[in-house]
Length: 160
Length: 160
DNA sequence: ACACCACTGAGCAGATTGCCCAGTGAACAA
DNA sequence: TTGTTCACTGGGCAATCTGCTCAGTGGTGT
Image (cartoon, rainbow over all chains, first blue to last red; front, side, top):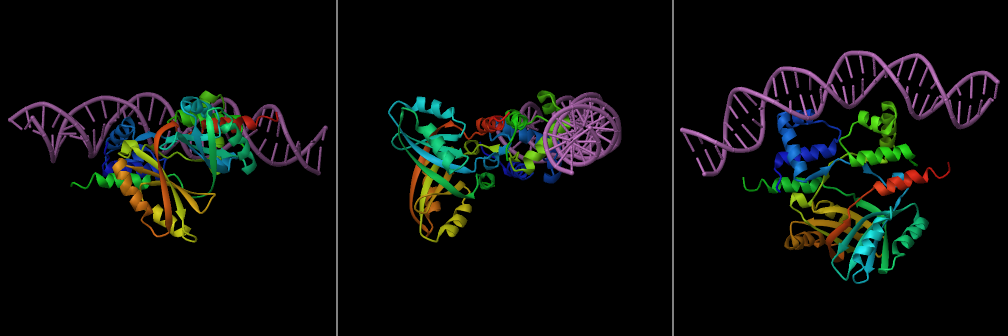
């Protein structure tokens, strides 16, 4: 779906001040409350806004080490490996990518030493042929969405 | 910081039903409203809960293609490359990892063809020596935090 | 001309929030 | 033991917001 400029402003406003209410948003944006309500409902039912879950910082939880593991999977073992990895709490995300049956796995650990334990648990499964791990040092651009939202909002404006 | 079992239940409850209020939470958890308030304030000021921003789905915005680019950076060009990548809306995340001056870059694009444009823009910068890209096919475990929160909550219980 | 759609501005009852207070019980130090 | 600190409880209060409804307006497409 395409979002227009008002949708974009709603999302950006929401991202900057999550605790803001519908009423205050309508005041800031200069539109009626019902309009903001309707836009928000539409954005959510379209799946553009998935939800408003709390953004938890693993580091603050005691898991300051992040790493990415690239896994090579034995033919046909994909589903089993996924099920295995889903049971490991330290696996925050799992993606399958192009290439020779590869998976990319985002991990966290309590320390570099603890990372060894996590990796052992991750790769301690039959279907995994090989694993290579890269430890994250810095995070110059933390996961963000606002620039993309603004881009998408502008795109829908082009044909005006 | 360590979180206890009640903190864990608050976060999980919040993750499952983000629109829930403090009052309703206190009812579900069987504690006083003030307690939930205080816990939430503490979790936020400790940085465990960073915020409640909207979770936007790039695919629903018209960017269904996700890819990871591994970049090799020329010595000393790191800061410039970061600044460059920060200006590209399709760059959702940028991390520096162990290895030979490597960066890992999460990208989205409107299509596989559009991905070429994005990559060209990403690598069209002097400090980048080499780039290799992996396109994401599936996402068996979408970015999650609940299992880790439950783990952390249990860990704090061990010594009881 | 007509129907459709989104937006506006308003009103209403009900629920929630932020804030305050005093009392209780547990942990801890002197 | 006594005293202090701290977190939690349960209550109350005014102000605010929400979900809902309604009629009126303007633009678009048939």
